[in-house]
Length: 504
Figure 1 (tube, helix red, strand yellow):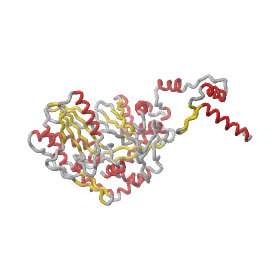
Figure 2 (cartoon, one colour):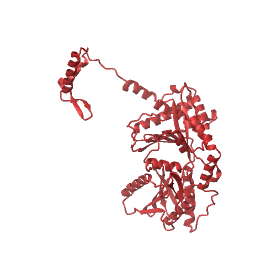
Figure 3 (cartoon, one colour):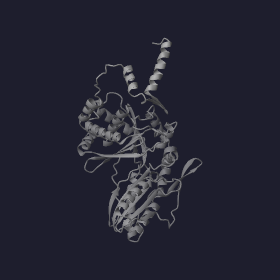
Figure 4 (cartoon, one colour):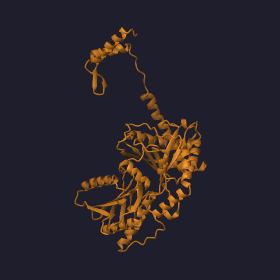
């Protein structure tokens, strides 16, 4: 929560850390029961009604009351509109909800709205701020909402199992354990050494100029690693005694290093942070961000890289309790709005599966929702599927990179995955990022520089251009434009002056 508050203060409010969900509900929906169910869940989980206030420069959590008559589910009737108008409104509302700015000092940390399209057709949008929840929290929220809705349909309160601890209990325990035991300082010392001399910036080639006030508009490209490749990489991980995550992190780091032309790559990745069983049923922000520094120096094979990625990941995970914001405070003298602190590329390995809302007598269909702003320059989301494949999503800063560039990175990542799966013993430099057809295009077409050399000299060519287009623009500098005739006059004047000074 402190991290989210700090980021919100630095950026002056941002929708980058929203967790929006859109659902199409078809069937007999009890709107009143759904509204009561939302109240039940919000009252059960304190982080959803915790605001952050500043006292003497420090962030303090404060519970806000939820008055009995306050409507927590906003309902709007669009049934009088045509089908075409309804679809347009759905897209607009879902997009607006994803871009909602939460006021962390006074708002509930969840917002829900229901659009009525017909008697048996509705759209539900739910947006939870990341400061009060994480991926596992979505599962808990959905499970508790489903249970509460079923109970309210029967005219009774949900019979929830009592929570053994609160989020505040865990936060107080974590802070006390880290600070009083000296564990925080021990872990910070590890990170100081691990990240000493690390590059501050990943120099990915951009298509557009990096500005501090850029929109950070998020672009998304989805893809899938087929089952054959995924299973081969899983086998590679088993041979190395490591996880599929470590193998994919190594491949991702290798790609980033080659694109940025850096032998030292820093990547961020989230970990669940729920180290004790008592917190598994809580809605709350437990996720911590870890940093993986991958050294690509030397003549490495794929096997060498996986071994390095394995060790660095293990070291990071054994020091995962140090809050990321403390690393930023400790290791960053000044914060830049040009790029995020410590790392600009991240990898999210998502193994918790999709959250499934179960409401009585309703068919539920998800609506695709994307965030408006990217958190980092690039984030690669990878999710293992039950059929053995791996679904992927690349989120990129579209104010820095064109879609064609991001698409080419996905193709290159897929090729590296295929190459690693069959040639992990080969040197990394020998694993091509482009296929034979693209290589032919580059060499034969793009790189075809064979031209007839003119017999005339450059001054003669220039004189011919002056004669042909005397008034055409030859030079532009700022607001000034110079024609070919004027350039000819000025250059002759300068040449005569140089000759007069005995300059050959």
